[in-house]
Image: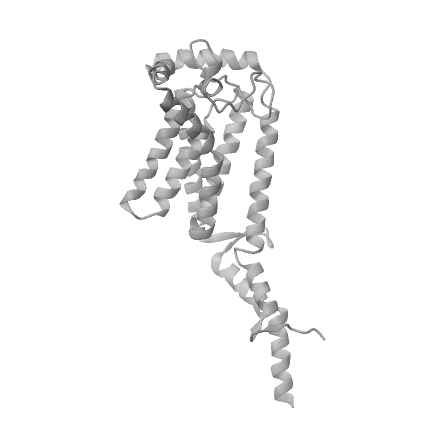
Length: 293
């Protein structure tokens, strides 16, 4: 006969089972596994998309021609202006490095713990934009401005230098300028904060993508058009999500049934599973025994 451990009047087995079913148990471990898996895939794909230097430089010259046709201000003019202020350049170098991965991880953790209802949307948006960008990196390799004549690699000059001198060395794909994931992630982070918070001060978060745009241009890691393409991907992803959301309605995906079910139906299944839990069954047997005796 199984025994139930009691501690201070509490059912320890039931507490552990309840924790495991909560979002801080199995679902948290699942999310960690999903994010780790996405990171591994992200890093692996980047290793396979970094070899065609000739195409990357040809595409860079095409981007220069296109931006000139659009009448966009030249990136080298902005960089030359900022090079006269080395303190600003050094700060922008640090901003480019420090706020990319940590800000994204911090945002996802904050949403998971404090605003769980928005977590899945932001996580899926970030994943969609990231892997769409990797496909573009594969079919359209693009050299960043710092590899072109007339630009200064400010990170190699002022530090911190995070890229090897040989563009084909290291784990990073240095010819993946379009789209800019630095800008794309910063924009998603701003959208998430504005969507979740209610304070009028929430719009100050827009400073983050604005500074990141300045950083990617000042450091000569991206062209203007790279940020624009990232913005288009974000808008397209949100549009697709709205269409799917309208089609799904109040249904949710059931991994046990492998189909969409209504939220009420899933709640009924969960209530039935909880009613048939070992703890509940044992309690029912004790009650039945007391009634019989």
